[in-house]
Length: 283
Image (cartoon, rainbow, N blue to C red; front, side, top):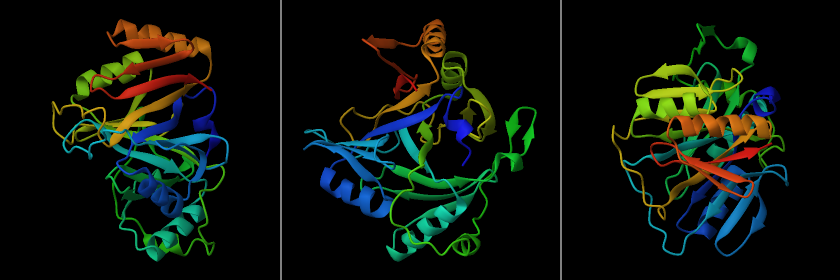
């Protein structure tokens, strides 16, 4: 994992906040299967971390929570980036030992495992190949979905999975959206991201030449509706800006493209055209 993609001057995803229908059940999964540690906990929520101090994922159980809705906008998956291939090797062994159903893919830039939490919230756990091995042509990075060589990953390391390594980060988020044209205007002209891969029905965007910090797709259907606020799924995610100046520039651009920006003290949030809520924070 190359830290430059998750520190100044890059803009990157910091934390993801999701609704779950049963906090106790979800916590058991995220601690025992994924390997998070609990940073803070109340009756209705739990803040999860890898390093004991940085929030990466917050679980909330609204009192009137509804099951995850199908064919809506919102979360496709959030992606946990492990520091090394040997960490992914240990995690894959852990998936086999716990008999957790998974999917897998080789994306050229990364090797990834896919699973869902008890509510059907999508999760990717991956490691990056060195950025020097990524193939760029005219500002686009080559990505694909090929078969993962699981045996080769398993042979990488003999270490046992205990918990997420301390320098695990939220590598990216991938969202269902209603329309790619409106979405592109918001994320590119508004937030200042670059399109680094076009894919059938999807855009992959980043800052600082990462393969993607935000994936966006219309695979749930063009014109898909936003889910109910109290359904299982995404509440919001954060984008971490390097400084106040870069955040202010993004706010101005967002207003120029007609996006709503909400300010409350030092808290700033916005909503993409599909209703996905983003908190704009300073690192």
